[in-house]
Image (cartoon, rainbow, N blue to C red; front, side, top):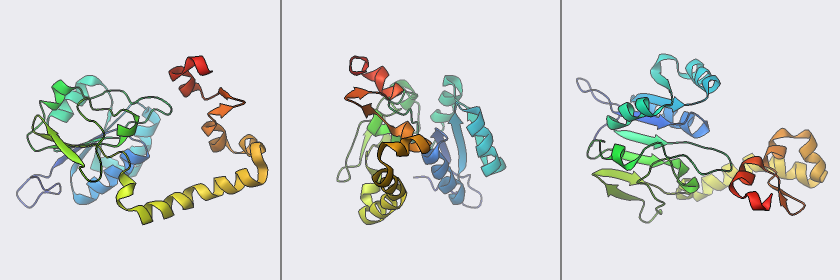
Length: 206
């Protein structure tokens, strides 16, 4: 095993995060707090700039491409998949051939597993059997990770969603005209798919 923060005289563990959104950012905060060496990959330059203001030199920020990902993943102690493409399956960024290059005992956690996952060898697992090994690499693919702490997860979800529920209850469909977040979440209207990303997956229902 590897202590992510290292100890005096021993280098820290390396954490590679694919995706610099909310999940990737929070994962990076935890990893940095533990003292790990952290790399974040993303294709959004503006997001990378924001992360630079947030982390400074404590995190290495890289534009996502196959060559850079291959070099980073092969030497990672912990790989976190945090890729989100709203309404679509997550792209496969780590093929099985790359997993074989990872160190024995290294760990993959794919938060995008409920959207197909961004690691080819990873499939959904459960809280009762959360991990399995492929090529000596530990895979963790629990789709509902917050379910491990249900009371806390429920309170957090309630706090986040209640303002939207109240707005919809008071204003109905008019709430979508004044709230951009609600409007972006509209998927079906008048029995038809209206969300662009979902339309691409199910064009016959558009």
